[in-house]
Amino acid sequence: MATDFPAEIKALRTTMDSVRDVTDLDSLRTQIADLEQQSAAPGLWDDPESAQQITSQLSRANAELERVETMDSRIDDLEVLVEMGQEENDADTLAEAEKELAAVQQAVGELEVRTLLSGEYDQREAVITIRAGAGGVDAADFAEMLLRMYLRWAERHGYPTKVMDTSYAEEAGLKSATFEVNVPYAYGNLSVEAGTHRLVRISPFDNQGRRQTSFAAVEVIPLIEQTDSIEIPENELKIDVFRSSGPGGQSVNTTDSAVRMTHIPTGTVVSMQNEKSQIQNRAAALRVMQSRLLLLKREEEAKQRKELAGDSTASWGDQMRSYVLHPYQMVKDLRTEHEVGNTSGVFDGDIDAFIEAGIRWKRNQERAA
Image: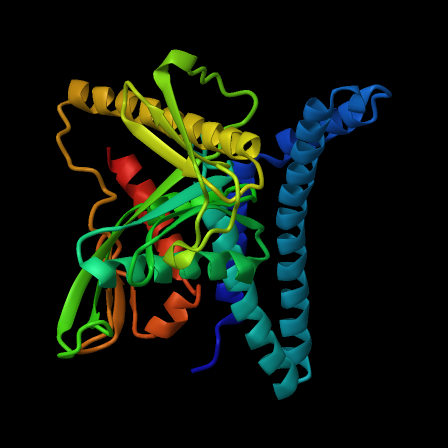
């Protein structure tokens, strides 16, 4: 069946109209002009933190504007390509137009999803913690598989990451791991990955070859910024120091540089061991602790609003995805119903479709509420 190019291009333009409305290009251009003026100020770098914030904001705003303008240009070029192919009845040109149409549709879809990320912290970088759950050594191995999956996803996109803490299990895998994804909108994208993940497979650790179900929990929090007002009194923090260690207990540090920080009122615990010094680990732990307490505060406020509204619905983040490797192969998101059969691709970081479906699902849930 021949592609209805006019209808497809019209649909793309309609989507871009809504993207432009949400992005508000006029306000974006005004913001860019203001930031350019601030960045040109003679004493800008007298305050390095403020300068870094201004230049980062300018870079993000310019990238956002360029993203929208480039997409409009690509749709215009596609329309010209289609007209050339149809006027000359050139099959090769029309085949090229087919490929470009598919590429533009995917890019516009990704841009549309970006416009759905309008939450208070969606633009932030993210801190992700993965913890092994029920399932013994299989759960620890699953936690390590998930860590690799997310790091590979970030690598595919060229996003910088930093592993902050790893706690190895005795036999194989990880008890827990914490890492950052240092790119704007990392939190908005990855927040839909929070919840309980389940793996079903023939256990490689069972000498009788039995099927095993194991679980891992994924926590995603926004990384705090200098403007966030989260002050933690020192008397509310308990700080323990210990020696960093790698797999099998092998020492990777000859000094007590690792830090375990506990927020006494809430019982929140953060461990950091991957920096070189105790001071660096303490600073990293404090930043993650502030991020967790910031999110905890927001969750408490949201819970109070739900109680006032009479909403007793459970959190959407629980039991969110199943990874089945036996007796068949399938990864299925239990909230969005999105599923794929290529399990190896998913574990190799091909999770964009799950993230996009999760963002759309979450936005629909918020609208319904």
